[in-house]
Amino acid sequence: MKKNSPATINRRALLKGSAHCLIAAGLMPLSWATRLPDSLSALGAVRLPDGGYALSAVNHQAETVWTTPVAARCHGGCTTPSGSDVVLFERRPGWSFHVLNSVTGEIRLSRAPEPGEHLYGHGVFSPDGRFLYATASHYESGQGRIAIFDAQQDYRRTDTWELEGIGPHQLELSPDGTQLIVALGGIRTHPDYDRVKLNLNETDPALLFIDRLTGQELSRHRPSDSQLSCRHLAVSNNSVTYVACQYQGPEWQQPPLIGRHQNGHWSEITLPAALQPRLNNYLASIAVQPASEVVVVTAPRGGLVVVLDGRSGRVIRDIDLYDAAGAKPTDDGGFLVSSGTGEWLWLDSSADFAIGARGTSTWAWDNHLF
Image (cartoon, rainbow, N blue to C red; front, side, top):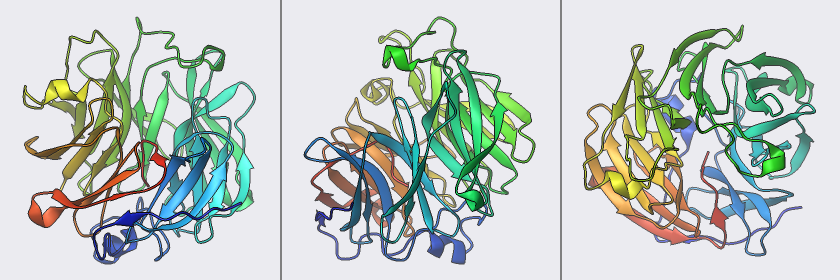
């Protein structure tokens, strides 16, 4: 079932291309590039006005191309390198994922995790598009996993890699496609207890680098505070990984929430004293322009978007946006940002990432665009 609904924006050609243009220009490595059909610019999970849930696709003018209802709230997703399949993951808890045709939005099939397991809302494909890697949890033991599905066999489950840790969330490929980079949140949950965090006195978050062919852990990098939960990440062309964290400690403490891994070393980006408290200890989405290393983070609880130079940590701009949600780099060097109120922002790289356009849609966007 599909439902179309208009979205409006006051820019003639918002997002004039998609990630395939970056590939052609040599700015984005093919191994981890997300391609979309020429007609699409971004995808995201949404909540519809009637309270239902869906996946929505928009074009380069931020107009809705298709909207496909789904049974439960979804979170993140990914596409095959060819752009033919879109995978959308349920979240809280993730009892299934859906595979859709990227041109029409039609659901081809849905798959469930193994018994006693739930998904965490994120996945990524191998460079050749054969295998889908998804983060998961065996919730009785709390052990984190990477679940592997074969796209050439209708996404049949083919393997499971056990992780040393709890709560793997977002994962991405390294630029050369040889490693999986995993944000390990360290927080244990159980479907029977809704969103209760069961182990806040013994969390052990980390950024993991995993051999993509064997599942072997290659390195582990811990943040400065054991309650600094690593959730989301973005990777630049220069193999710099930027991590968005959520702090689980006392509200009056305000540690750095942006991690950076480069050349085997973990560091953290401290924002100015006037800006740090406004994040409300919670980041949702992080995105990086892969060549320039300009980074955008969204802070929905603080109603804030921050644009910074990833290399130096210098803040370029901060923007008020109520319930700021997803962020995605655009091929013109800027960013597209969504919100839980349905608002869109296009950040113009030629104007120091000021708002180049603003628009609205009729639904609430979840925390990610892809």
